[in-house]
Image 1 (cartoon, rainbow, N blue to C red):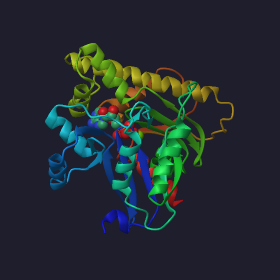
Image 2 (image 1 turned 90 degrees about the vertical axis):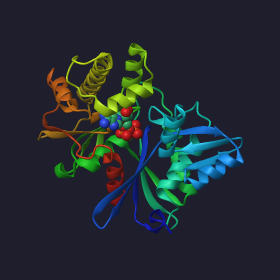
Image 3 (image 1 turned 180 degrees about the vertical axis):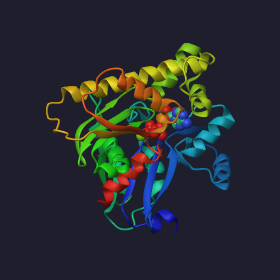
Length: 332
Ligand SMILES: Nc1ncnc2c1ncn2[C@@H]1O[C@H](COP(=O)(O)OP(=O)(O)O)[C@@H](O)[C@H]1O
Ligand SMILES: [Mg+2]
């Protein structure tokens, strides 16, 4: 029996465009396990399959193709100079990707194992709608729930921004603003005593920065992504072409996020009376570069903000915040 199968408590699952993360609680500690939400295909041959098996590479055979999945897909992409493909796009199942469900099923199955008993609880993250846009959230949610049901779990969706509130804002009685900036989306939730009051998502996040910066520099988006993750910092137009392009689109993303947040809160009529100022916490891979918090703070201060903020801070564990929050919701 492996670790996943022995565990019979509720779990939290972050189904992100880039990464899928599971959170478990063991003796008062949280434990995480993650896989890249990516794959690549190789032509089927018996020899290749036996080599992959021998090397313990995470893969599945689908007709005439071998699908290499998760973290191993990235390793193979580097070896073969190929691009990985992704089952999700902008926070939801990618409608143009025929392998999307099979790959998600494989990754979720690997991370969670089978349920220890029928109906073991899993809370999984789903995005909030992008304002004024049609969305396929209901289909996406039903598909993830279906995968969980097949493994014997009872799946419950939780909006990603609310999961961040659960994961980060226990100290303020789950009152405040939780934001997760990922690759496909930024998800935002303003909650009061754990009740979501405003939630929405913004379609400018890490992928937007990579794609735009790639377009203006003539580089590949995946290369820009690697550079961004390795050594980018938000300290102005002081570097080379790539640094400057990333700076411009990071600034655009942050300004768009702050502006959407401001206008949403300002136009919400059912906003409860907040006697006290509330905290705002930022999480997700896109908040990691040095200078992000300062830049976000400057954008906030540029014009009046409709609620008083007691603090604006980064999650100390930005890549696991959503999974932890989903777990905490499942344990309530
Ligand atoms: N150290 C880093 N610096 C800048 N961006 C990063 C870093 N690490 C991850 N990212 C970016 O964060 C995004 C993924 O964030 P994550 O919260 O894991 O995403 P998702 O919820 O979309 O799965 C990607 O756009 C990735 O390039
Ligand atoms: Mg995410």
